[in-house]
Image (cartoon, rainbow, N blue to C red; front, side):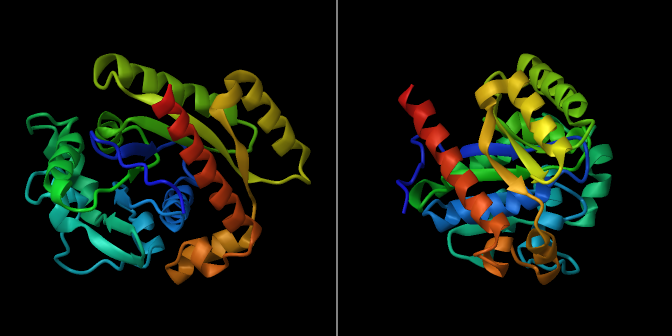
Length: 274
């Protein structure tokens, strides 16, 4: 069990983001959340993607009339009122619904339109003072730079970037870094990049090795030592409504996410000690 990393000023808020789709973003959010919970952290996953894959990947089925992160963003519900238990000890989820597809238009006319999620998290932290607080909040975003993603970046302490080991990886990463810098300059001065995790890594493929080498040469120790390998068990798990750590704890994908969680906790401790 790890030392719980709850901070006096609230949980550590990490946004899992990449404006490119298919890089393992949601898979990383749910499996990292599960791994953090498994080592003793209390974790909340906030699903801000209209597709809702983080919610269904945790076995949370969409129901008619369900309250979701959409209702939080438009001010109809508090974050605390939409959170549901995932069935995994110490891991909760604020689910998404298809209503989020129209949220951007509705948010455009609201006050503090880029800070709606930040305000909701702040209210939750204040409400949770009397209870066991979350030590980590992970926000899963849509694969685009829209108002939902901007809300997540404005609410976050840091960005965790899943990066697929493919030819155009560095190009997409440079665009994301510019976006993070713009948000930091104009909207959220505390925002930083917590780290980059290489996903879908295939040691048999020279391209994977080359991409990893290139990314590490540019970003150095911002790139996690842990890499997430291509693994069929990781791909199968969401269809069963389970994180891969519950679907097959012994597979190489599960073990990689456990190592990633340990590496992130270690970085967080170093940040606090600095």
